[in-house]
Length: 102
Ligand SMILES: [Zn+2]
Image (cartoon, rainbow, N blue to C red):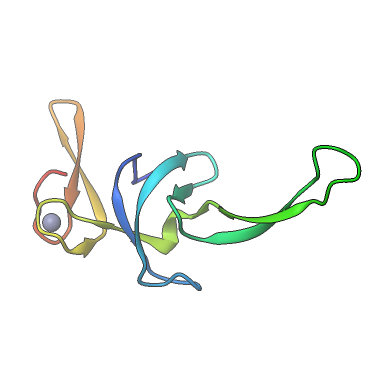
C-alpha cells in the first residue's frame, strides 16, 4: 500500500536525483508512484498553440516509484521507512527510527 501522502517531506534514494529533498505534491496509489515538487524533471516538448509558432521544450516533474523515496520524519528529522500501527481499528503511520506516530 501507499506509504506516502501529499505534503510529506521526502528524500530520493536512487537515480539521478539521489539525495535531493522535496515535498510530495501528488500520490498515485495504484501505480505506486509519487510526484515531488521540482524533482525528477524531464524535458517535455510542448506543441505550438498556433501554426507558424515554434514549439518549446519545458522541464516538468515526473512521478517516480515510491520505492525510490524515503520519508523524512517530521518528528526526528531522519530519512526513514514508514511502518504502520493499528490502534482500535485506526491505522497510524510510525517512523521506523524514532517509533513516533507521523
Ligand atoms: Zn522519526
